[in-house]
Amino acid sequence: MNKGQSPEPLDFFIWTVEDVGMWLETINLGSYRQTFKEHGVNGEYLEGMSMFTTEQILRFIRRCHMRWGDFITLCKELRRIKVACLKGEQKVRRPWWAPACLSTVFLKVAKSNRQSRVVSLKLEP
Image (tube, rainbow, N blue to C red; front, side, top):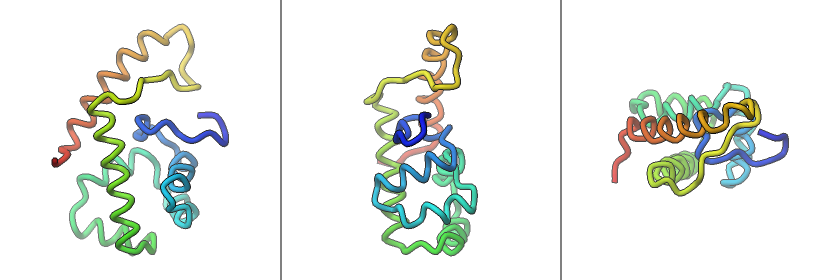
């Protein structure tokens, strides 16, 4: 990920805390950027939110001082990204840290991994 460049949506499960902050800005939830950073909310954490219990959701909302409407917006945007991943609406790209000599191998594995990880999230229609 280049500094200042928005994170690739379909790579959300490897987003850093900084990537999550940039994404929050793009979905008009930038006011939570610092709070998410302080609590270490990264892409892996966002991915796991789909499996949260009611108690965990309430704890997250309290810890981040979120309004319900903002939490719903966050969930809708996450779902939009996951659905796009399932449909294959964006191409897989090699991350900046992956060596160029492994591009072909990485892209094949990443594409199959994306679909299997998103399917495991048990998205509801």
